Length: 333
Image (tube, rainbow, N blue to C red; front, side, top):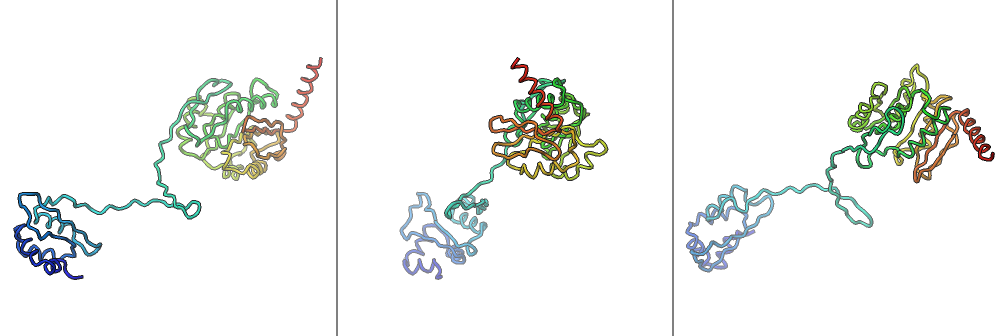
């Protein structure tokens, strides 16, 4: 490309003297400009020196233009503020581009997640810790069992166990424990020991453990910070010499488990015995079998979109049938 200062002098011979005259600089200044691939335009008309200087507009191609230092020198030489209009090139923040529909691009900017917080909306419903408030996380990360469902579950278990006022003494296993409200309810109503299985470390340290300390049940509790599947695979170690658990509660996140696979794994595990009761909370339109290993379904109730299934030994089912018969007979009389 031909030098732009040469082009300017060819097209307008009066340009060069006018330029040096108006701005009071020598030809060395033009030599400085000619040495750089700078595109500029100068007016050949005389300029009134009492008025503000005309702004020289310039641009350059990437890789062949002036450096920031040269720009600064250039602006100082022609009487402009050396720090004005000089800025470093901005780097563009990389955005994740997702394709949606027919070739349409949707730009999704990553948003910072707000800090997780807790509130006290739950409470112990019965037993020695009755009416004590429990912590639970705000939002939908952890979904505790509804109080109406929890109350119904423990009422059924107490009647099925032959002790309507409280639970039969025994050991409870709370799978997907979250806040620990189910296991804490079990201790409050008579259980001697509860094992909590919860994988979320934030929930364990900020919700579950504080709830156990607040209710005074930490000494009779064991927390297992592992996945439920891994816990069931290593059930022999967890059970130890104490044998199967007397009660098991299963309250998983609805969309994150396959109930058929989960219940099959539980039924084959060492945590289940012939006299074990299992409480399962499951969503609408989920098929639950009438048995779980050696246990039979003794109750299945619906609470809106939530279902509650309770499995237990056959003797508990017979006891419930005989109680219903006695109730019907009493009503007829």
